[in-house]
Amino acid sequence: MEAFVFILIILVASILQTSTGFGFSILATPFLLLLYEPKEAIQINLALSLVISISLIAKVRKDMDRGILKRFIIGSAAGLPIGIIVFLIIDINKLKLGVSLIVLVLTFMLMLQFRINQNKQRDMIVGGLSGTLTTSIGMPGPPLLLYFSGTDTKKEKLRGTTLAFYLFIYFTSLVIQVVFAGTNKTIWISSGLALPLVLIGLYLGQRLFKWFNQRVFQLVIYIILLFTGVYLLIESWQ
Image 1 (cartoon, rainbow, N blue to C red):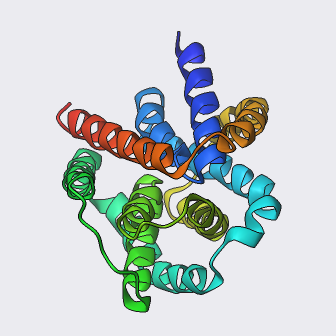
Image 2: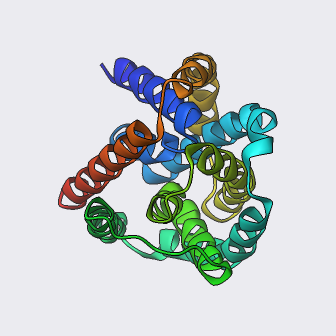
């Protein structure tokens, strides 16, 4: 049963990541935490997300906003060390509770047509929050997703910029996790076994992306964010 759940998690999350530019860590991490210890779940997620980003970067390079990308990276430099400290000293359930409440509140604000203007300072802040969440729970997506949704960013630009940022943030976070939290064989064996599923998800996700219009894309964002917030909230109480 665990093997089936693992296959389903990786395949669906890979399709989502490829078709939207986000979603692997948002969908995979909560479920991987059911099957693995926090350190293992986070590092498996980081390793596989990095593979997806490397595989797709050439195709989305033309869609990325290099100015925003640069500011995200600069901002994340402050968030990355904060995240690993949080991971090492704070109870994982308290962290899940905090993230879930933030995600749910901001998602409902977006659904009520709350909008925010994009500027350089906010780019840096969002990058910092994303960096903190990546090294702490392996989920850089919520701050980026909420920010881009609130600024009505086109799906091509969102996908290209987030995937390019993930290439940096996942690699750096994986190195930080391995150095400060340690690693083990389970992480790398499970990641290796998941690679064929990731490749299948890459293919299916690329085809699915062509079918999304902006309205459907926005709906998918809301569903994913609500699911993530509710699931993390439930998990934090166990």
